[in-house]
Amino acid sequence: MTEDTGKLELYKPGGGRPNVFVNVKETQVPVSLEASERKSTIDLDPEKKKSASLYKRYLEDAPNLLGFLDDKVPPLSLSDKYIMAWQLLKDRGMVVVDTMRKINDHTIATTNLQANGSVYDIKIDRREERKRLINDEEFLLIPKEAIRQEVMRLVDVANKNGILLPHDGLFHVFVGDSDIDQIFAWKVVLLDFTEVTIYLKPSEMPEEKKEANKRNALRWLKDMEVVRENVQRGEEAYDSYEFGDHVDVV
Image (cartoon, rainbow, N blue to C red):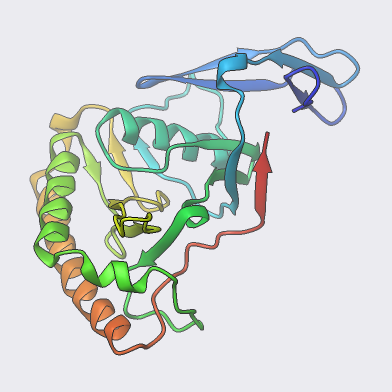
């Protein structure tokens, strides 16, 4: 993006007509842009032009979108499918990151939740080295029952809206920094879509898939207990949300 003109410049190696995919509710509309000298520009809404702290994420897999894509739709890149899933999940009431944008076919930039807090990955079988997080104290102050209720609410949202959640590590817990009055925000959020399946018609989601969501949620809650105990003992916190390079987008 050029700071002086407020325009987003799109380059395509070798010239040609680059495609930009615009998400509209449950439909992804391809918009062709005329290319001139291997470059196209899009005027941006000045009101939406603001600084955002983002992380890069490099994709190796993509969500499964059942019924959304057919032979009439051009093949989508991993990034396109990932962003399409993100928009669908938002539209169907799932808690996800606020922003996401494509960098290239295998790379996206997404809201950096760690800019103002900590993100806890609830997986007890991780082996890589971890670091303690600055919001451990706040994390332990969150009532267990409040987390349980929110997780089961999100499972209900998923089951009513045709969303099969990942079987491993369903959600992350975001804990914001405390303000001057020691008040902090927290939320349970779905961050990884690579193992998510979204059904075009929620009614076509099999009952056994809904039961799988419930079983995996109960297992996640048990894992969360272990993570909380580890944090309370001062052991390494479970954090694996650092997907890649930090990026400031203006």
